[in-house]
Length: 238
Figure (cartoon, rainbow, N blue to C red):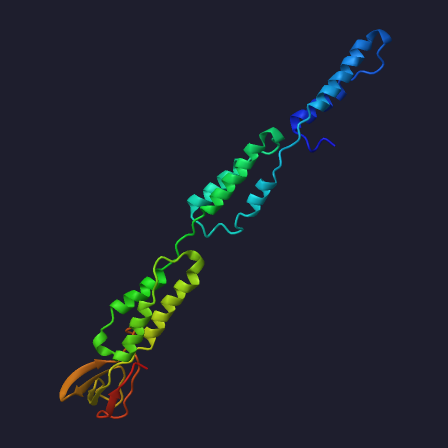
C-alpha cells in the first residue's frame, strides 16, 4: 500500500516496477540486476506523507456560520484554508504545521459584525419628538428608564438584546398617559347634529381651546359626545 507515501516517491516505485522487462537472456543479467536495483532504490527512497491531523482539526474548528463575521476576517480564514498544499512529505512537516497555525490564527481573529440598531434609533427619534408637557411624570419616567437601558456597541450575536431595547422604548411610549385636563364641550364642529368626533372646542380653565384627539403616534382617535355640553375629563389616550 503506497497510499501513505508521497505521490512522487510512490510513482518512482511504480515506474521502476513497470520498467521490468521479462524474458531476458543470461547474457543480459546485468540489465536484469539493474532493474532489481532500480526497484530497491525506489523503495528505499519512499517518503512518508506528513501528518495533516493538525490541519484537519484547525479546519474543523472553523465556525459553521461565518455570515455573522466581517467580510475581511472571513476572507482571512478562507485564504488560510486555500493555502494548504496536501500531499507533502514528512520532511516538510513544519510547513504543514504552519498551515494549521495560520488557520487557527485567522479563526482567532474572526470579528463579529455590529448589531443592527436601526429600530433603537427609530424609537429614540420618537422620544425626541415627544411634547413632554402633555404626559404624566410617572409615564415619562418609564420612557426615560427604557432609554437609559440602551447599550451601544453590541455585536450581531446579541441582536435579540438590541431588539429588546427598542421594544422596551416603544412599549413605554405606548403606555404614556396624558396629564388630566378637565373642562366641558362648549360647541361641536357639526352644525346639524349634537354628535361629533375628533375635534371639539373645549373650555379649559374658563378659556376655549380647540382640541384634536390623537394618540402618541399622532393618529386621530374617535371620541364622541352625546350632548354638546358634555362634561369631560381627558386622562389618557385610549
